[in-house]
Every structure is written in C-alpha cells, then in structure tokens.
Image (cartoon, rainbow, N blue to C red; front, side, top):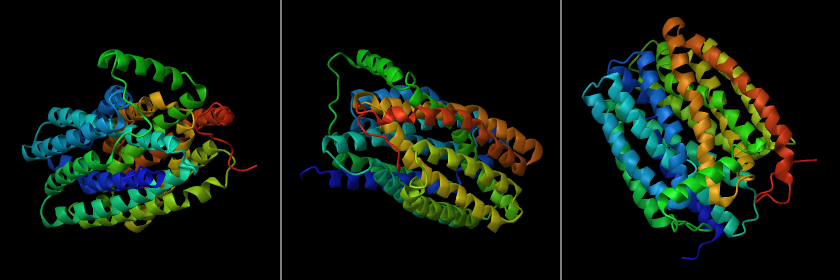
Length: 421
C-alpha cells in the first residue's frame, strides 16, 4: 500500500489510541495496588519516584536508539519491555513485596516507557516532512489528544470495572495482553519513513555522536532549553496528581473500596481530555505565541489544583480535576509543535527524550516530597502546595517566549511562527 501523509496520520492516531487503551487499563487502580501491598503514602510515592528516576536515567540512551536503530525498533522494544514489566508489577503485588522490590520493578517499567517517548512523535514528524505534509502539526497533535482521551475513557473504565468485579491485580494481566497486541500491530504497520537508521560506525560510537549533537541542538539552544526547564515542576506535580487523586477521592467519598467511583473519575478526565484536544486550536488562536498558550495553561492549572485540594465534595473535586485535564490537553499540542519546530531530524527523538528526562527529574523530588506533606498534613495540603509550585515554572517559560522569535527563521525545519498578527 502506498505511503501517504493521510495513512501516516491514521497509523499515528491508531497507535496513540491502542497505546493509551493498554496503558490506562490500570490507571484507575494502579496506586491502590501499592497500598494494598502494605506501603504507606511515602513508600508508595518513593517507589513511584524510582519510576520517574528510571525515566530520567534511561531517557537519553533509549532516545538515541530511536535516532540510530530507528523509531520503529525503539517502539517495538518499548512494547516488549512494558509487557514483561507489567507482569512483574502484578507478581510483586501477589508476593506482597517490600518497597525495594517495587522500586526495582518501577525502574524497569520506566525503561519500557522511555523506548516510546520521543520515538512515536519523531516517527510522525519525520514522515510528514518527507511526504511534504502542508497542514499544521498542532492539528495532528490535537487529534492525538482526542485519541488519548478516547483510549483513557475506555481503558480506565474497563480496568476499574474489572477490578470491581474481581480484584486490583486482574487489570494488570489484561494490560499485559493489550500491550502484546499493540506490539504486534506496530510491527505490522509502523515503518520508518523519511528517516534512515545509521549504524555504519558501530552502535556505541553512533550513540555517542547522537548524544553530543542532541545536547548541542537541545540544551545548547536557549529557545529549547527554557521550555524544557519549564516542565520540571509542572510535570512533577502532574505525576503526583495522577498517582494520589485516587486515594484522595476515595477519602472524600468515605469508602476506600469504591473502585467504581475511580472509574467515573477516569471517565471525567478522559472526556475532559477529548474536549481539550478539540479546543486546542481555538485556544491557541487566543494568543499570539505558542509559549503564551503554555504559560496561560500553567497559571490556570495552578489555580485549579489549589481548588482541588480545598474541595470538600467528590463532585466538586471531579469537576476541578476534569478542568485540569482539559487544560493540559489543550496546551500540549502547542508545546509539541514549538519543540518539533526547532529540532533537526537526526536528533529529534533524542532531544524529545531529553525533554522527558528534564521533566521527569522534577518528579524524582516532587513526588516523595508532596507525599511526605500528604502523610503529615493530608492530601488537601499537598495539592495546594502542588498548585503553588506551578508558579515556579513561569520565569523560565517567559524566557522561552522571548526566544520564540528564533523559531520563525527560515532555517528551521518546521516554522514556529506567531499565530496571529
């Protein structure tokens, strides 16, 4: 079958949908698995911080694999690794493993996700450039957010229902099966287009070359560096919210076994994510610069998190959480288009992985820190503090906006220009 930009976009959206469905099948109950194993808030979040640490340590090496062996190879490695480590997660629950075992499995689980990060996005952008796609990248990424919302809705509701009628371990077994199916589908339909793997110099030498050039094109460019740094606290807080909103909602409801409630919360988040993706382009037209979209979203989300922590009822908390998810989905396409507009193809996956590394590094400290606050003063205090931490990202985001004009120069592969005059 002939490769066209339409086919590439359909494959991308299909992979996003299937990947999200598999990943989020345990989204509603994943933190409860750790608590059922006897871990405290601090221990559970320390284990989750090890997951984030694994992200930080392995992002660059796995990203460079996508830039040397190919985006498809990296994606397939991610699918295989996640399938195995999901089963290890289930086994740790069955054995009531100590926190060190959870930490070790979390690190290995993170490696699987790092194979995905950067590779899928780089595969899409390279293929669209090669096929001379004339549309806007934001529109494709926004549709990806809609697919993410659909996958989250189906996965989290399905996983919560399965946990309700069986136990919290069964969704992990189903997730492993879905990940295996995803890997088979990707092997059949995902082929590198517009990118040729480079292996002539040997794998280790080629990886070092890509790493050196990626630092130069990523961290060495102020327009890229500042937007990366802006994600440190925002991403760390987002990880914490995703992990602890479940026990917090159960606490508000007064029933720690109301898994169905978590399914409803997941549905609210998923629908909000779809709405955010649909509104992404309209939201962007309100601002002149892409980074202005991100700055406005960070400010709004900080206020929403403070309100979430102060919410006294489940419906109010769910409404605020839904708004938080909607804003995240609405601003992410602008950030993705901004970064991809500044990156050369040969280092795209590695720099995008480096971006994830910088974001994850904030979560290594933020998650256990906010978890300790939750243990001492309760979940509400931790969410209020998390909302306040969003403001820390603002100075570097304003610096990124000052450099955004550099993305409008003719040399850039994707022109990141002001959105309206």
